[in-house]
Image (cartoon, rainbow, N blue to C red):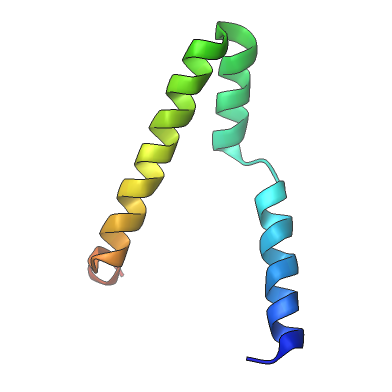
Length: 66
């Protein structure tokens, strides 16, 4: 992989990570309306769900779904 292609990938990935999606907005709204404890629980649940989805995909379930 050339350095130009890699730098383009890094720039695009960084831009996508900085854009808040629905999950970030959900946690932010819980933090503002319910407080810190609910926001931490919500963020932990999101992280656990992402981890499970990533693990199942790495285990080959993603190929079965396709």
